[in-house]
Amino acid sequence: MSAAAAVASAIRPIVICGPSGTGKSTLLKKLFTEYPDKFAFSISHTTRAPRPGEQPGVSYHFTSRESFLDLVKAEGFIEHAEFSGNLYGSSVQSVNDVTRSGKMCILDIDTQGVKLIKKNHPSLNPLYIFISPPSIASLKTRLTGRGTETESSMNSRLQAAIGELEYAKQPGSFDLVVVNDGLERAYGVLKGVIVEGKREGDELPKFEN
Ligand code: ADP
Ligand code: 5GP
Image 1 (cartoon, rainbow, N blue to C red):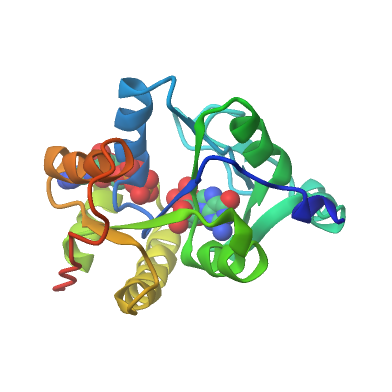
Image 2: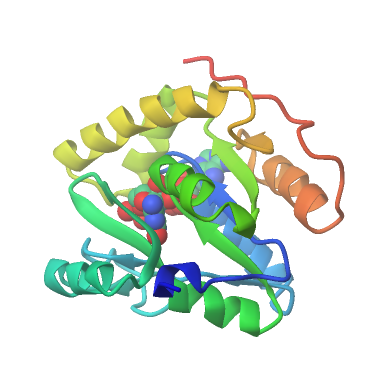
């Protein structure tokens, strides 16, 4: 069995997906603060540079392209993808570390990663949640406000967002779409589903631009 196949989870993992800047990290930070014993983050590898405030080994495992590709060769990733000129991947070890701790594993990945997990690891059977911005215009405002992007990385993230929203619109692509229009409201919906087990699929995408 390959290393990448050796990932298993008794507790259903949760995949959080959504355009860069839609508020995934902000929502997850609230969740991990409120439920430190219940959920844990699968720390991805990335070749992008750390942003101010991001801690290595907490936000991401920041790595060189060469080391990343070595881990790809060693079949150390469940999935990996190139996004906006950088490589990102969920390692077998990160997911296994969380699942062995008995906590619910949360992955924050893009739609390429979602498609790869569906195709290559159907037995993981995660709950797929898409966090949508209320509009592309508000996404741009959030990315600008975060102050982390150059003009070029902003454009490539907005371009990627259009494709990700298209995918999320396809029936069955996600178990739930949460529109992050207001942080407290969106957090309440997210928590309702993953903590309180409320019915999935209640929230429908709006996607007006
Ligand atoms: P992501 O992890 O999806 O890339 P972040 O969590 O970094 O996004 O959020 C991007 C920016 O948007 C941050 O500056 C964050 O404070 C802000 N933000 C998050 N949620 C909301 C919201 N509901 N309304 C307005 N701004 C928000
Ligand atoms: P950012 O650079 O804004 O942190 O992340 C950019 C994009 O990469 C986001 O859509 C985020 O969900 C995605 N991402 C983060 N980690 C992974 C990963 O391990 N795999 C994949 N496929 N995407 C990831």
